[in-house]
Amino acid sequence: MYAIVEIAGQQFKVAQDQKVYVHRLPEAEGSKVTFDKVMLIEDNGNVTIGAPAIEGAGVTAKVLGHLKGDKVIVFKKKRRKGYKKKNGHRQYLTEIQIEGIAASGVKKAEAKKEAPKTEVKAESNDLSAMTVAELKALAKERGITGYTSLKKAELIEALSK
Image (cartoon, rainbow, N blue to C red):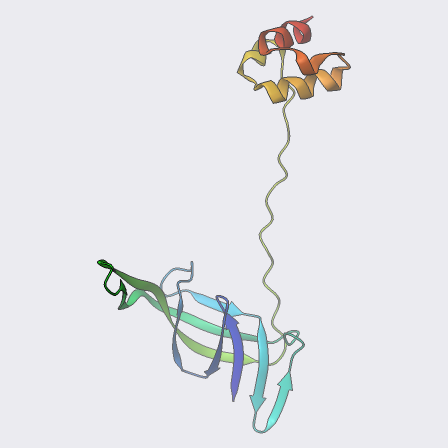
């Protein structure tokens, strides 16, 4: 049994007890991870293909460790111009071991939602801490005419009345 699953933006063909090096994952070493973007599952000749992913399918894995890949040397040269540039790069990787492939019954991971930001109404004593754009927006809300040509001190004076 094998599956094609998307992990950290790349697709991998994985099987039970296989070790895979993937781009760095935010999970801690020793923790369990579930990947729910399974594109294909093959089980004893039965092939299930998703469009684009199979609903309810999932691959569970254990994070074995975080490491850095081999160094890649980038060398640029323009002949007869005296231009040479040498650079190196080491990719951050995570080693995972596939523990199981489930064709159904896996719940989708919920996306983390941020709390909506609430704006606090400014009082007259902290008008000087506001920017000119914020003061003009406040003047527009209060119905003050001619606020577009006023300077910051004039806006504060008009709003504090």
